[in-house]
Length: 148
Image 1 (spheres, rainbow, N blue to C red):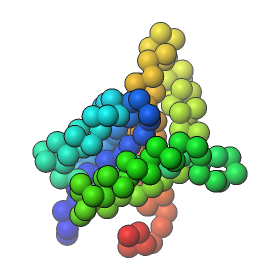
Image 2 (cartoon, helix red, strand yellow; image 1 turned 90 degrees about the horizontal axis):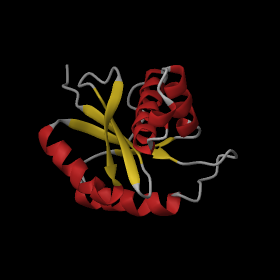
Image 3 (tube, rainbow, N blue to C red; image 1 turned 90 degrees about the vertical axis):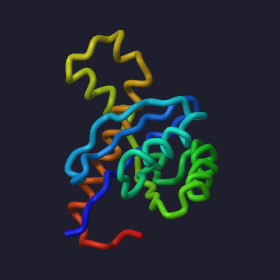
């Protein structure tokens, strides 16, 4: 049996980026951190130096019609830098439609106070967790080895 590494999930934002990570068996994802976006690459490289990470999943912002959203112009340069800095790390883009809305609803359903729900860093980390959990679910529903 091959050893598995964690999967790192990213909800990329212009100012702040939410991060989530799976357990080593890739069963469940949980919040990792919210970091200022200008520190993101350093944070990821530091995390990967300490933990075995198998791949990175980045939320792909799409519009309702399925076309890439305006924010792709900020994400694409980051993904290119990630490939350059970590050439052996697989990076997967995964549809993130509605994750911020779902994150807000999850906070309400969880009984979080309104003042805490205004903390956008919490929303970012929860959105990253939702992206990563959705990705894990999609992997369960597909045959092995269909990804690059």
